[in-house]
Length: 221
Image 1 (cartoon, rainbow, N blue to C red):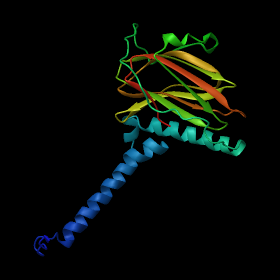
Image 2: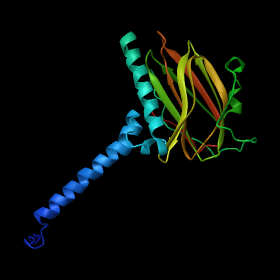
Image 3: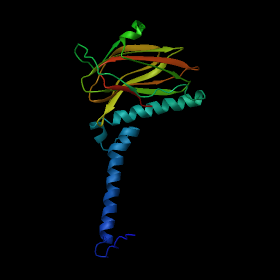
Image 4: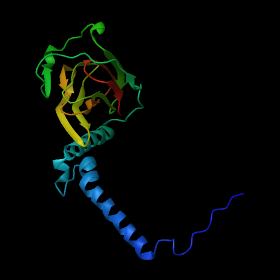
């Protein structure tokens, strides 16, 4: 049986080196916490770096969604999720003509079901009272994806947003909306999509249909 040789005292790091390494690690952790974690998770940006890197907005969105979840929990018991949407592989996208805009949305009253055969992907899931779900498209900057989602049995609060590469963006938000459709243009390479929350007293079924330029579609939360 092979035994490794025990290192000599001269080969071991000195106490001063260990202390210096520990201090450097602690300082690095504090810098990461203040400059990245606090802005991205809590919307707190004491240094201003998070605002420059566009992480503070993402943290503010998370805090707003968390506040809504707390309000839902205090108003209505939250049930277990009725269904789970797994990651869905998608085929190569088809280019859509037109000048890219941040978000081109058709008025809510104009939303109408479109034949399933015209869409590339379709996902259906149920939201119990107080439940939320997030689905994202993986897109390259400038990619354009058309979408349509319809709520059966009620309405939802939603946030259309994106994140990736240390950046985040909120395209549009709405409350008590029964349906929406339009074209989502990726402001940068990353994940772009929707977060829905059911603030009503009963279950609702959401049908999401997408097509256009994106690599795949997946459930994030």
